[in-house]
Length: 280
Ligand SMILES: Nc1ncnc2c1ncn2[C@@H]1O[C@H](COP(=O)(O)OP(=O)(O)O)[C@@H](O)[C@H]1O
Ligand SMILES: [Mg+2]
Image 1 (tube, rainbow, N blue to C red):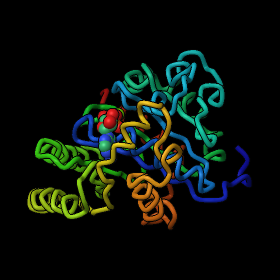
Image 2 (spheres, helix red, strand yellow):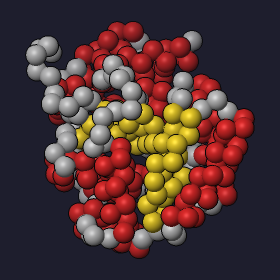
Image 3 (cartoon, rainbow, N blue to C red):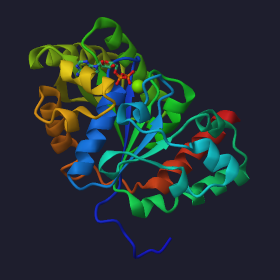
């Protein structure tokens, strides 16, 4: 790609992870992405969550192609991406996710060059990784520059979140976790659950776990999902949408926390390097 066609903003690559499914990770990723796009950012959502209600469903779109088509049929990347509201683009991982672990060196090089154009096209990449600590979570969270950890205010979510921090910090080199407590009844409950998490992480793990904010329990979230529209569009003034706006400001409307020389190449080279290491 041409060296002088730099994007306006430095690329931010953020993985959104959770300990268990059903905590609102996909809904948060999608609505954060839409909020960012409305604020003028160029957003790509990589849907690597193989769960049921995926990002495409929440946005009411049906991308025709996925990562597998990129790998197997050498389709141009732009062709593979779906387009959602506010021009948010979606890369559905589909069955391609599992394939990442088994690529030949030749395929790896092909994939890296296929992703080249994206560096100029986007300034924000949000990766909705699968819940828990499977292989693809390690790849994507390990490859991103930042990790959001979505936690729900219930004991099982906490223990699973702890396990995720443990595995990602020990096996994927993730050192900083930005915790968002989702579907909390109020801020005090969110802070309480965060405190419980840091009590164990600070005692047993070598990872930095920061409180990033909370999204309240809000029936409009569920209603928006049923309508297959982002709640920040459908109910822009609902409490959850206001919380996501604050989250956006804290996360993306300021410079990245450190000067990581990241980028999508970095992302994929690292993904592939780790996948090769793991496959060996
Ligand atoms: N802030 C919230 N308030 C109320 N319900 C929520 C909230 N966030 C998520 N939900 C509910 O949780 C369900 C699971 O959300 P989803 O984003 O699919 O979770 P995950 O991706 O973690 O599996 C949604 O169908 C929605 O009804
Ligand atoms: Mg999900």
